[in-house]
Amino acid sequence: IFDSLHSGLKNTEFFILKKHKDEKKIELIFTEKGKKEWKLVSANLLFTKPEHKIENLVNFNFTYVDRKNIVLTFFNTVINIKFPSDYFSFKIPPNTQIVK
Image 1 (cartoon, one colour):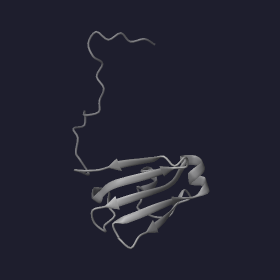
Image 2: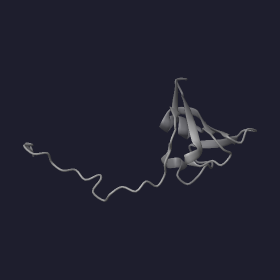
Image 3: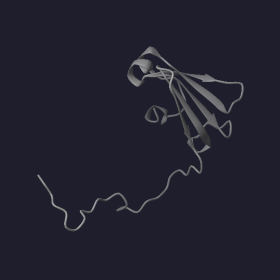
């Protein structure tokens, strides 16, 4: 779902955006395709500001087709972190047996 939001909050083939009077809240209502592929009925996003940027997102509440809920809570969100070029490089530990 996060990949589908990378270009901003807008309607897709998987969900329709519903804005609330409180500009800090956005609801995603899933289409039949979204329900089928992602098993989601709705998702609610709560932001700290009316600016709907990832750094302002505090809660992401998902409701599945079986009515189960999952809540993701965000805090201290930092974007564009710079990592050293070798940060994600895997080095084989000493004494490791490699099986092919």
